Length: 313
Image (cartoon, rainbow, N blue to C red; front, side, top):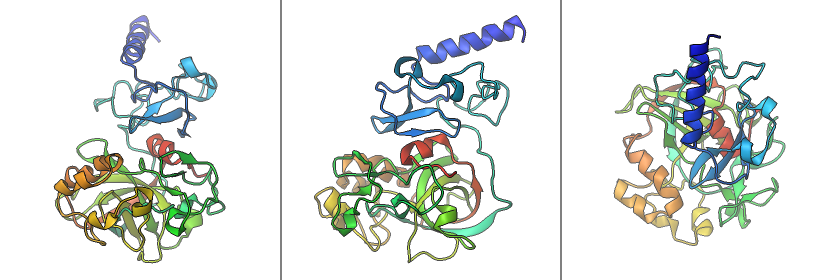
């Protein structure tokens, strides 16, 4: 490696540290509470309603297994590789923690359909024993704190376990969003799709051509074949209503039971912790009504597994 390249790398690293961002381009956490780990063993937290990277220089951590190890023998810091998370020469905005496309796992694309919902209930993939995963999908209590007991009773059945409010969609760029979904995929079961990630390429409505990468956290008996029910606040309660209990409100005011709100103005009626995901529907998603799509399984971005705490093994 020549001296000019070394100086360039040092300058880039120095700029990232000065800006308070981690190796993936996400902001560094102020605290040291770990809520998830990335596929490269990077450590992640959740503060101020966004994912943040744990500052291992301050909090400690296994430098040999995360991307703070600038001399990693696994070459996770290949500066010119467009397919890794530390591509400092990427022309995309490096403030996005995942500007590159994840590795495709499936052998081909399939066609499917989408709907939308937000019922606040404990997701099906939050129960233990559903699939071979690092841990079941995180659930939260009424105050928003993560519940460590995977067998805690669902808030929709009189218990204290609810869907965590950070499991809502957000835009990564003008053409890519991340989020979560309930799904039913032909030829498989929860054992094969719980905590798996899929890239959806929309093929109808005004968002045709846009893509969304979702992690499957739930399923439902009312879902058809190759059906993804996208989680978005204000998207309709559907069969169950855990929101009235979780937020001590009448969630019937959150729009129609199936379909939810009709305009962005209604997002103001939702709890503050859900309003960004509600606005996403009317901004990036353009209030598309159940768009058709093609989907393929991909490697989960660290930003998604950081929120659910669930990775497939």
